[in-house]
Image (cartoon, rainbow, N blue to C red; front, top):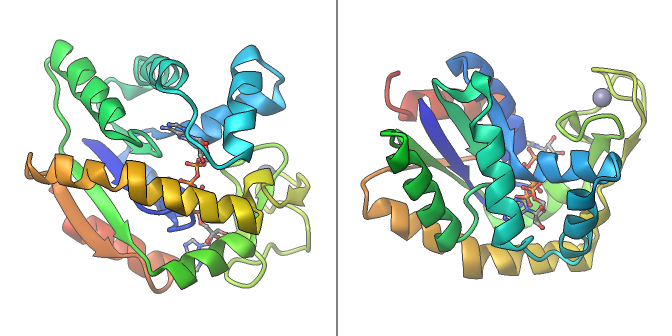
Length: 216
Ligand code: AP5
Ligand code: ZN
């Protein structure tokens, strides 16, 4: 299965992707997590991405598309993947189509998570992530770690993401509406979009998503 996950910042893409990828037996590929891993390792790519991310802007396509392609070409992704945060504009969607076409592959579905803006703001304001791995995600009220400030998975320190400040979140939402939402129409024209509500408990949303996705 090859799936693209879309939805506004804080919709719960990363949270759902972890469960869906496990259920479907495919890797979870998050361009946001890849950028954050590069930043914490101090790589050149991380240095290039950080200023854009901190301002709530998209990292330029030249950097992003190459990074996503390299990850999709890893051996664990030959039979499918769940893309989270990529593509994020129409030119990235076109580049992905081109990549897949070259390999004789196609997408199976685009899962669109719908969440009202006031809920997204609450989810982002309370989010805490792990210093060791930004895929370890908690929330001060909705998903409390067993011990305050400590990651349940690896014992790492929990902190608030640099781009989760109020001003940056506003900018990220604006970028989502202007640059990312148009990919939903792009994929609708290919008949691939499945829209679900991402309100409710995490496991309820996972159940809804599994029910809406095509059978593998
Ligand atoms: P990225 O990391 O992709 O961030 P995002 O799209 O803004 O999404 P988030 O990670 O903020 O939210 P999410 O939907 O994953 O929610 P989560 O599961 O954490 O991108 C960051 C930046 O990197 C971009 O701004 C850009 O600069 C750059 N970038 C990345 N990809 C790029 C690309 N392709 N091109 C160019 N630039 C790119 O959940 C949020 C919180 O809610 C958590 O605390 C969670 O515990 C909680 N929660 C989740 N589900 C529920 C629920 N059902 N009920 C209650 N709480 C819940
Ligand atoms: Zn951790």
